Length: 469
Ligand SMILES: Cc1cc2nc3c(=O)[nH]c(=O)nc-3n(C[C@H](O)[C@H](O)[C@H](O)COP(=O)(O)OP(=O)(O)OC[C@H]3O[C@@H](n4cnc5c(N)ncnc54)[C@H](O)[C@@H]3O)c2cc1C
Image (cartoon, rainbow, N blue to C red; front, side, top):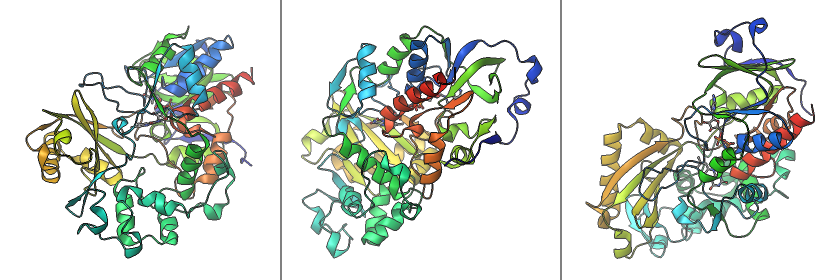
């Protein structure tokens, strides 16, 4: 049950005041039936659905690029991805859209995608390098006797078998508050040793074990289990999909148009831009909540939604893209992927041999550390540490690019996760249906995650809007 909506001022004040903008009387004519904030998958899916119903749509995008968290780094050798890559077998909405806009999908997308815990990691733990075969007896292995045989990358799944299980991808919304405990507490209950907790935290897909609800993990497991089958990637790079979606629209997609404040009124929504404003009968806001919380906003919303805008955590992750002078991993006979407990290094994935590129991926406190270093210091430290961990890389690596999602003002993290004690409020928040201002984005997914959640939420926001006109 959602508490009654009330007028809420977020980010410290009224949108009109903070924008230094004109009073309501001088607000100008309505330019569009629907203004969509954000040209990522959610915004573009919403735009397509609104146009299909005959509405006039304008999409406003703060960046000078379409795609949001689908971002292909075309200036780097091999055009690696900075954002989403893997398309699950169950991404039916996204696959349908790809088909409609003529974007081909290729099957596959494992370790090269930079997100899979591919079997066969080379471990560097407590400064000792070990293959999976060497791990159980490695001097770097300080796990308790009962868990010594489990590889560091498999520890979380090993203990998560004891976590609360969900009956399906949507079941997370109805869990009891007593199950909404942290991953840390759930791991302790399951018997994980202190060293196991340290290693799980080292490359955790979140910011800390204490900060994520075990239901967040249970939800991911339920989603994966519900869609068995091979994953796919977008042929030619992920960003091609949102670009093709934008190309399929009749209305404008205006790049470099950051919405600086917004206000919902009885008969429309006013969006305040760097220069001027835009008025529309409805707006769909797809800004990630970690970014939205910095934007003054005046609208009616339930307290649960206001809390999620203010508090929903987003995983911090930073990457380094490295070019090798030759694919040294083919010569040293060791597993390709490096998995370390060094926060600055995290994990290093081989992206491919032609060109020989690697991607370093570090999360949480490790991402903060990488972000704080001066780029030249970070690059030198990364190359030196990798040479010590994997001697065959010595003298062969160069950092081409550092990427931090939390530094991007329109993202401020890679994706949301359910914070400890937030299941109830997130479930209530995503049930909210605005009168004029509607919300979407991957954080509003009900049954899906990642890209599919973005599309699901965009289409749902469009349907809710269409039901009101
Ligand atoms: C590193 C990484 C790996 C991932 N891996 C996967 C994966 O393998 N599979 C998967 O399914 N998903 C993955 N994801 C998640 C997936 O990419 C996202 O869920 C999805 O792209 C989000 O789409 P969205 O439209 O909700 O948000 P976004 O793509 O973030 O779109 C929001 C848009 O709003 C714009 N914006 C923000 N503020 C303003 C403003 N004030 N004014 C105007 N515009 C603004 C932003 O610039 C952005 O373009 C990954 C994401 C990252 C970052």
